[in-house]
Amino acid sequence: METQEHIIKFKHVSFKYNSDEPLALKDVSFSIPKGKWTSIVGHNGSGKSTIAKLMVGIEKPFEGNIYFQNEAVSQQNLDYLRQHIGIVFQNPENQFVGSTVEFDVAFGLENHSISYDDMRAIVPKALDDVDMLDRANYEPQSLSGGQKQRVAIAGVLALDTDIIILDEATSMLDPAGRKDLIDLIHRIKEEKDVTIISITHDLSEAAEADYLVVLNEGEVYQTGLPNDIFSDGDKLTQIGLDLPFSIRMHNQLLGSVDFITYEGLVKKL
Image 1 (cartoon, rainbow, N blue to C red):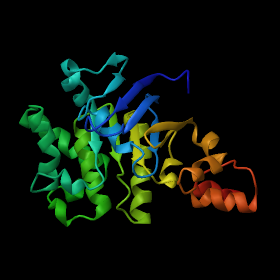
Image 2 (cartoon, one colour):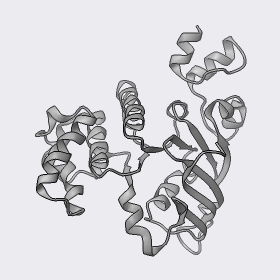
Image 3 (cartoon, one colour):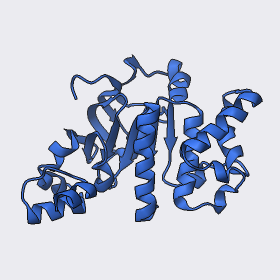
């Protein structure tokens, strides 16, 4: 991945929430490849959500620098940064403000002073992109967990951002809803040419990504391609992460890892 164009870089970033507390992030350096799906993984308390807050400018580094499109992030360019990065949280209900699905998607456009005529074209397109156009007049609270996440993603797509951050976006979904959302993310990445960053502790979800950043106790533990990182699963289990079922089954039956997803397991068997 060293030859990839990178859209976000962390260089020697440290962070603490309060001056009298220990560092939540310690000398963290990594890059996010443009147009790819990067998963940032780690157990609870490893610093994943802190990194998401730093990426969108909710928090500022204690030390070090964050770069967006090779430009150091500062107070002067925060508005520009936030125009290009959208975030979907674990519980999408915390993001809903509209009385209907279409009004909720339109809310972000209103904040960006988009004209009414433009909104009338953008909102249906964004909902259609996530297969939710037929529920445009539904109340968001009446939707299933997976449908709520789709609406939250539509709100980000409507703003035409370069990056979509998914902060534990699949953690509250059942297996079917999780698979549907992951399939949707793959499709959006390819069709919209956006950069996906998923924050997760679920290695089954991380296995779907193009690139991994593994955190442990506020430090970067590993970075690289999923196949390379999962090939030495013992390192991941040593820091409290559970290997995906497909890899555990493969290790027991066949030995060395040459695939990492459920689909790969089925094909191999």
